[in-house]
Image (cartoon, rainbow, N blue to C red; front, side, top):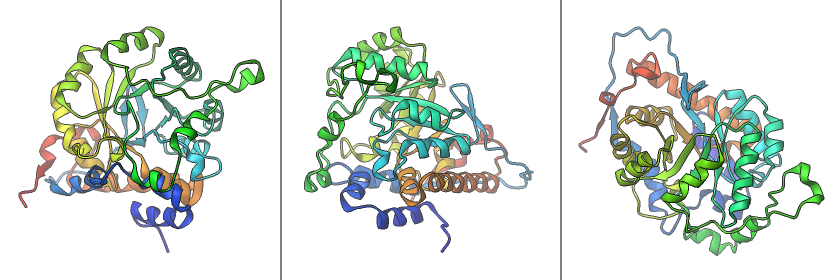
Length: 353
């Protein structure tokens, strides 16, 4: 049976993964309200297509932080891809490279940064950072990513501690133990350097600490997890380079707005001074179109990438990305948009139902 939509990959992944791994990937915080709302919130937006336009040629290309991508559909940072497929993040990186899009590699990747780069040397990569209590370790991670050719630093701001993920607790999944066992040495250090394990995420990290990050890297800095105009305005004041509107897939604080609902507020607050992206709830090409019409420069995919990975490794991720790219191309043509630049706010309205 052919795969005809992204949720087909979800069903295939569920069949292939053990219960604890499936629950780890799918679970949200507390009642899963925000996790589910991320998907449902897109349904209240309606498209306002324009017709009798020449859409014989539709161009889905755009740029992020000055780098061209084939479509505004990229890969969010998620950890431990080896839970879904033996080659883990190496397979994900190869698929992203083949698709011509950006892959944000997680601090909690199960493969080394060096192996990920070697697997997809031409791929566009950003590095996602959880600031550690050990600042020396944090600095080493940043500088290692920069030296390996990662093009931006994505700092996750919505996880000063882990959210209350009930399924992990029921399954007695010791996430802290998994994280603390991760070896952060670069391979070239071998046995000559002490083992650099995960320290705790630094819950004291705040706005004034951003200047320290900016002083040790030349990479653009993007904050992931912003949901309000107040924080968007502070991001502007602290001269960061971009924002990913995100609620961590509903895995942190339950009851916050769906990402797509928070997006217009953040976009309005930055007034075009920086690029704004979003993740959370993207399941169709129409969802991508709606997010761009609401002001996102690009969207990022979390769970659908892991579904594709569990289904067929690198090729499954490629299929997910190509399916969404094709759907987005169709949605653009059917709404009268010949380029990403033509996607504007008057393309969407909120349903009165």
